[in-house]
Image (tube, rainbow, N blue to C red; front, top):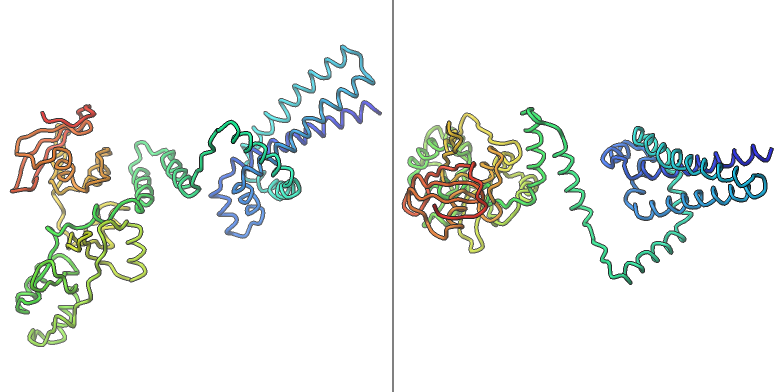
Length: 428
């Protein structure tokens, strides 16, 4: 009877240690995204597990305390039993067997099993561990304080990880881990997801339509001339200026103008441009795309004018420009398909100087620096500190760049060869 009770007790203790060990694996490995999905659907157990993950240090400390208590009871109980009922040889065999059983069934087996059923097991143990954490909270607080005090004595800094930043990086890692080699559709999905995460880091100056390409109209022109300009314009909204092209006083929708013209039955003299315009919306060029996207939604607007810190007009940005950062180029029946980039048979790329660096990186999977400048021409000028002449060749971050065309003080056309492996910028 004594033997039976002893072995049943050992079995229970090892099973309990395995349960605690598996619980630790389940809580730490359970997908937080899936748990949030279950919690949103009303699963209270998922909320318990999420709470344990959010306070992971205390949760793990609690499980370690419980596990150490159980693992302490196994050798103590077996030693007392051996002294009373077993010989020295039998005691050695018993201790060895218990050690092997503890390693296999209290550590290895439960972790292997839980990895295959992480979510179901985490939902099962969540309420149990939540009660254990609350019960042992005073003890875990004292032990955690002792550990932190030891680190302080040893002058070992404990780095602080911003939870929001860490979650963002984890999401990026999850996207990158998604296998998509050779699958263009999957690659597009990955690119779109990564672009969404980058919206809060990209200023509008990197995406806007530059003022050189912006169509504006002098409000003092005759109505007939304004009508001609609007009819030949591919933009749905046109800034109107007075006295000075920098002095934008309103934004006119082409649809609104021609609707008014239809109402007046073609009588242009009765059309008042001032009454058809909407007030211009100016935003700083340092504003990030995510903030601007949210403002577009709040104001129910699709168009904003971009100015620098001195109030000078830099260009405009539309809702479509931001969406194109996510899904890629959107071309409708009114757009002129840009011919700014051409891939050559020899693998080089001919691009206009105004081509955004982000578009080149995204299209050809390059890594040209894009933090400080928006266009390839701007990058070249920033590095060489001058406006290069036609025919000059430079090497930048492993890319050979040849100036093919220069128009006054602007770089018109460049040839980019990505095969160079030179990590510095120099003139050839």
